[in-house]
Image (cartoon, rainbow, N blue to C red; front, side, top):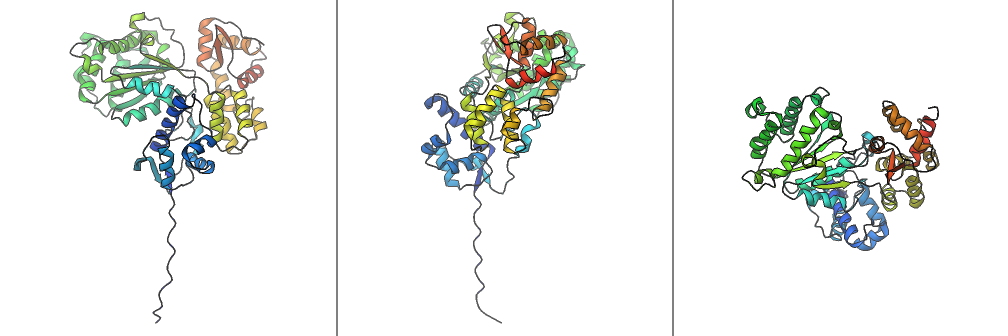
Length: 443
């Protein structure tokens, strides 16, 4: 039997680490803050980031893709360049499941750990700072698929790090029968808020029909939800537009929200309790529900309107997708989509998967192209409103901006189909102009 020592097994090479969702969020937020404070609001190019961090552009590209492992020291240098300290929660082992790029197109909202979210400073910082204030009310308004929910999700992620209780509730989840009965709607609202904050439904203890629905809902929050939860609460109401179509509940519901906002300012014994509640209202369209000025939450608090992506931001996004000819891809997509975040993301997604060429993408203005499903859904929705179809036909076939009836203009704008300037409207992007010229040519 041989006593020769067995050959030494080579040491396993350490796989490295990848930014976690939390680390990516912190890094993006810090970059956005520095962009605003020191870089005229423009995103850093890879070369500028390289000079700031003393890391090569290739290394930075690997870090930002969150698909290729790097060593921990690299992340420490990157974080340090933006006055951050790397913590264990900011990275994961390289063997952890990578970000699934295919999940991007599931709906308009980007996953919270997506490397493709584009910060639009100073909006994120404004929302965060506003919601840190007692009794805050923030209104986020933009056409559909402009990134409203993605924005709010990221702000709430930051607030949870400050031990705030947060929830996003889509009012579209309410059944049609619920939206036509104030009592049922407010009870549904109380129940779903309780569920989201991990509380039992105690409507039977806090609801007395003798006092009226708005009073009962207010009592439920005051004597149960706000009493049970000791930390600040941020309640974001998404798809608020769903209530606009139901005047039988809209005036009372929105009047109640405005009363809650005012309660934190009364200076009485209950004000401190109501200061714990911070509201976010997310909607797509102008408010055309008749509300008294002092009973509307839509003329109070902070209004945030999301802009389209500008040339620098589209270029930054193309950079994250790893395109070599950045300027060409970014400029072409900006011209086609008008900077609509969802349309830009869809285009870059398909280009990165090499399912289409840039030339093919720019010709995808029909119902069977890359944007086909999205365009068909828009047309199907529009067909339910003949007056909107007629108004849009005037817009897309005109060589100059046109004036249409204000309510129709607001509704077309809420769908993201047009942009408005000085009461005149024009197509929001070349993609919509070309598609609807074809689709509406027979009207």
